[in-house]
Image 1: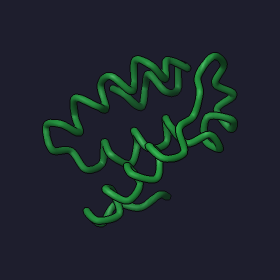
Image 2: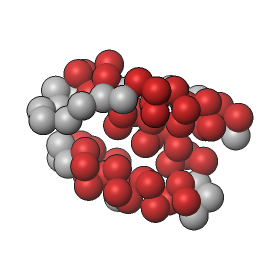
Image 3: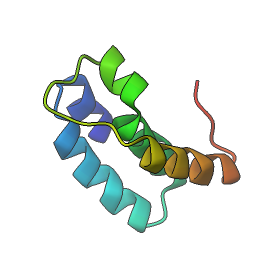
Image 4: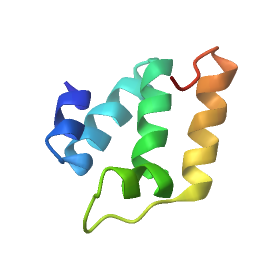
Amino acid sequence: RAEGLIKQGDISGARLLLDRALQAGSQRAAFLLAETYDPRILSSWRAVGLRGDTGRARELYARAAEAGIAGS
């Protein structure tokens, strides 16, 4: 569902869902949530009105990598 929100441009809504999924133990959510904070990804999505957070993105990418999840 979060991926659908991202495709619709609702990054804030996706962040909420992904944060809940991450807290429930989904490591895939860590990677997807990292993308929502990655300034490069936000730029490629042409997200308006959102700021990236490089530190948060790195933290989440690292968490996903530790779980064996990497970008495609």
